[in-house]
Image: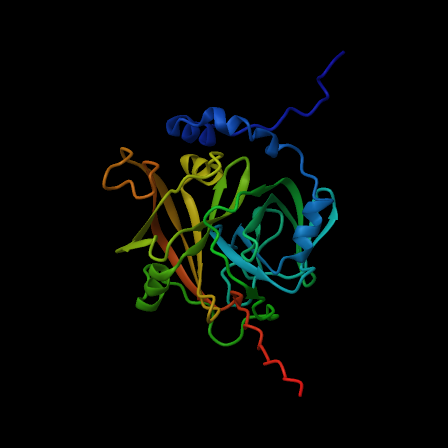
Length: 310
C-alpha cells in the first residue's frame, strides 16, 4: 500500500538535535518526540486554557523585531473553537511593542497557571488580529513540566485600550536603573525565540530571585535541568533572535527586551556552571521598552473572626 499521501511525522529540528547531542540527552528527548505530533486542543487542554487569565505571546512587530508580550483577561479569554484553532479574546495592550501586530505571521503562546504550577505551549500562525482579539491556527500544542514555576496567585491586569494616547511608546538601547533593578530581582521571566521553518515560540524561565544577571548591555542566566527537549535553546542554535519579558507582579510594571541570545557551554562543575548543566544563556540587548500590562498579586481574602455564641 502506498504511503505517499501520509503526512510525515514531526520530529525535532536540527538545532534541537544539536543541543540534545551536546548535552548527552538524545535518548531522553526521543521519548518525548510524540508530543510534537498534530495538535488536539479539545478535552483537558481546552478546559485548562479556558480557565487561564495569563498567557505570553511571541511575535514580530511591524518592523520585524521579535518581542514577547503578556495577554491577560478573565477566564475564557483563551477559547478553543476547534482541535487546532484558538481564539484569544484580547490583544497586546496599547503600551506594548506588539500593539497592532500584523496577522499572517508565526506566533508562539504560553498559557501558565502559577498557582498550580502548570503551563501549556501553543505554536502556530496568527490568522487574524482585529477588534475581537486574535485567532491562532495551531501547529503544535503540549504541556510542560512544573519545574522552576514560582507559585503565586494573580489577578488579570487592566484590559487593553483601543489605541495609544499621548506620547508614543519610547524605546532605548540599554536598561534604565529601575528596569535593571526589576530584572535583577526577578524570579520569573518569559522567553521568546524563533526558527525559520518552525516559527515562533514562547517559554518560561524561573529560578531564585537574582538568577538573571545584568552586565552592561547584556544579561545572562543559568540553564537549569529541564525536559531535555531544548525547544528554546534549539531555536537559538539556528536563529539568535530573542525576546524577554519581565514583570513586577506587585505593580504591573513590565520590561520588554528584544535582541539576540547565544548558548554558552562550560565544563560541568566549573565556576560558570551555576545551573549544574554546563550551560548558560547570554542575551545582548537590542531594544528596551516599558509597559504596564502584567497581572497583579491577588489580594488575600479578609478573614473575619468567628463571632462567639453566648
